[in-house]
Image (cartoon, rainbow, N blue to C red; front, side):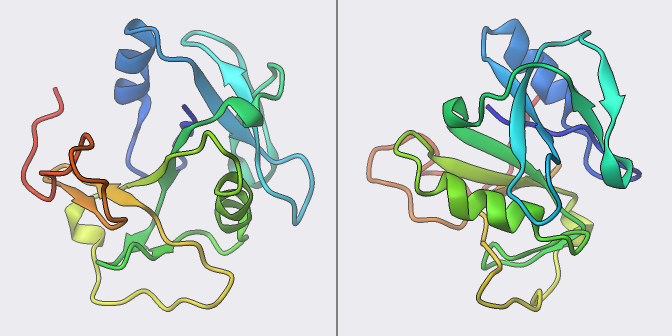
Length: 162
């Protein structure tokens, strides 16, 4: 599962990532390897050292494992009911989602944010990749239709994570 190390006031996924790691879920964090390219995901485990990456990011130094990523957590600054998100404008997550969605084992891109970051509409263009779901401190909102009987079908309701 791909996570991220938060920047500034972004929703902090670290408690969730620690819990997942304690349950045996393999984790990876994104790394910017080339300007204009999709993100590469590198293996990460709690306590592993991170290095300063470009654009204020923190990145692991582990091996690239992008092919093994089946789901990613995506930071956002704003989002709408269509699953469109506003990021920092580099297009890294849009390019990454376009690439991952062609991978046979990839399932979901879940945005993490705060309910107050929901707006009526995020401006979007043909290169913007919508999220499959958005998790806030109040709810899990599924954007992508969930297959009948699949986990998460009864979502879009308040949830308690911890």
